[in-house]
Image (spheres, rainbow, N blue to C red):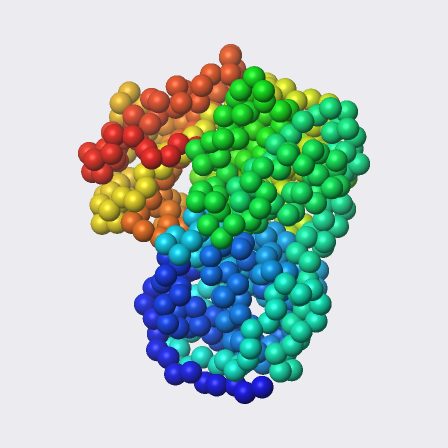
Length: 542
Ligand code: G6P
Ligand code: ZN
């Protein structure tokens, strides 16, 4: 095997965002873009010599070609062994599990998550560490430094590997193992959940529909729900992974999973509906006529997880990202366990999970998970819900109604303003940040601000400090709003406005939009969203 040093220079725009480096697919395919970034990852993490890696992606356009390039770079840099999902496929949770199970040094996951795929859409790469979780802030910073001083890419001159043939292959001395992407993940789920109880529930007539959105979870959902638990084959819709996700937007929320939502709100609704995203780490849970917000899902799971065998011993603690609603805080308080509030991004849960301080964690952005891996896990959440339903005998709607009666209801919604001019969005945030001190005691659209701050987080394990993580506005009467700019977009800026109102008594079945309308008006009065952006309504409400 010949190794070539290809001369290169830093390429602008290689700093990762909330979750890896996401760019337009064509940008990734431009000469040396992917190569530079992969080499920078290796240089920033102490080199690849003698190391073992996991490699796979969500099957979007450019997935397989990118895998061949990464394999050549890994071989060129002296890696010992690479485990690749068959056909280049690995969901993010399955990759995280494989890294942990095999003791690999790290993993490359090719995905832009819920962003659309295709040559004119998005591509992404995230590097996960030996604990199976996304690179920490410190490691990410080291990768950025390496990308800014890169001079050469080491690459093996080798032919493509057949990614479809299970078994052993090699590039020079580097072993390449093509593995089934589903088997190990299935075994893990079998350990955590009582799949026989779920199978019995389904055999008893319980119906469900899972929307794989033509993304990576199709094969996983079929193996688990259809083959293992006996659901009918049509229970998994859009089950075939496609390079462009069938032209869709593989984001499991009421807007992008509209077909499933329509079904669940109709008279023909099955008992349970769920969806996952491009790379399989997000989830949406819907009961018959009852959408469960991700924040409520986290709270319900925290309350009832001990019904699943993997969680019978109870929870060490829980964590949520700051914009996620405080519903889980109320469960943690009642159980007398700690509840941590972290910045947006799964990577911030890693240290808490590694040190055993938390068992469960979740985010408003449709992420829920536990210490079984170091990523959020879409199908895990689905099985957790099915396990809770199977053991409790209650429907989704009954479970939520009982939950709200016990803990109160945190009405919640996120309003997204997409593709806003970056300069306008940055100025809006900067202006508001500058006025935060003066807001308390003032009223806007009839709501009085009690406190306001710019969220910062000090990691309790490694002491790293993350500032500027979102502007928080607290109001009289238990309302909270958060404003932050998305860190995952690939064009323009996305302004996210998170609205929450806690109600503890009376009728808890109002429409969230109605309950939150006064808060939305107050935020607009404070931040001038419509005046500055010219938008009269958000593009997406979740
Ligand atoms: C990715 C990360 C999540 C995070 C989300 C937020 O999905 O994996 O941990 O919550 O991005 O994205 P945003 O666009 O709000 O920065
Ligand atoms: Zn994802």
